Image (cartoon, rainbow, N blue to C red; front, side, top):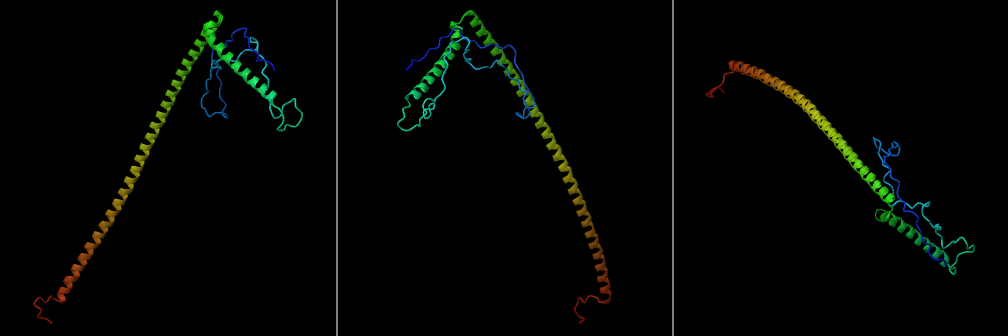
Length: 222
């Protein structure tokens, strides 16, 4: 069995600072945004991945399937030994852990143990990222303010539309009730006129009847 190889670094890798933001327009099919989305290229993976040209990297082997190792051409059964495949997978896991440890350690050791050029590059990258964050925050606040103003304008327009519709409905209802009142008034006046005419006719008929057949108040006529 072989021992675990070590990673010896030659130079501390520093992420390349970007001074300008890169913008692109999202396609309509992939996003429903109405305005182009602005994305900065300064937001990279931190800690940055190790540079193979500046670091002695051991090639990490691929993960083996213990039930189908490439060196064994025979059929796998319950008596087959898989210790070599498990050992290689374990070595691969340790190498990947060691690589991640070196990646984080190199990134964190730059402002303390790096060369003056590396420290200046680190500080420059920090300033660029902070400026970009401030710019993105301000842009986000402006965008939120525009969205709030647009939402307020829509709410005011909707409220005005509702008030206008209510006023139109009130006018329609008022016109209908007024017409209904006028028709009822005409009908009532017609009924009252008919009743007066009928009353006059009945009184005339009663007077004529009294002329031919007077009322026998004393009950003497039988």
